[in-house]
Length: 288
Image (cartoon, rainbow, N blue to C red):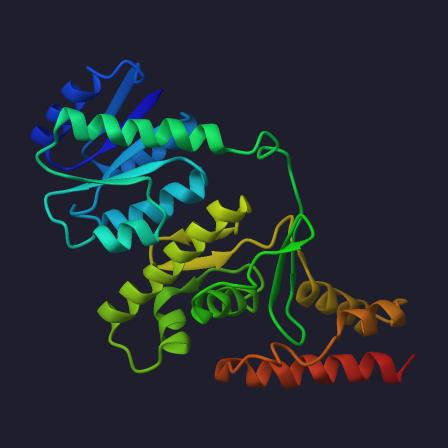
């Protein structure tokens, strides 16, 4: 296996590298003290396991999010000198959580867990499947024609997706997201809650094998709508054709509009959008 170490402490990198060299299953190890350079490396080089330090100049939890955008299913082992992040690490579906100083026997267990992880992967995992999202009446996320957000523990995961979808694939500032999803929160607490919600989504995407295309760029975030079937987008396209005087499909429009936008959710930020899409719908069906 190919292992990647991301840690801003050289002595920690050196010790972990020495121990990994003693494990037969690991035949190559690359290390970076700069997490940004590590991310660039991952874009061009596939890894089988990542050892990620949580306490760095850049939050390891944020780097976790960036890694899963590059490679959704790579096993990640969190490393740190503190145990305060253990619960959160496992909530994010990290394969393991290693405390410093590292011990060979404990490290071997982490590698064994990674081997077991790969053995459990579905053989058709790499086959492309369709991600489809419905926004009218309620937010429903389908992958391979199966609903994947039915039993999500936190409603904020749904709301984060809903909010980003309404930005039509454009990047939106994290401050704006916090202001709308967690009004009244200070920026530090809001960012922490946003990242926790995002990590929960990463966890769910690993469980369902669906890649939820939420992308981060510095202080911004977006839902990449390319190659995703979204009723919200399709309704807007039909309305654009309507405004241009082109032919539109009435039965398709009625099928799309199952109810008001996020009608079954209590999203205060969506009230104006609900009225806008209701008006679009009424204009189209009344003129047909």
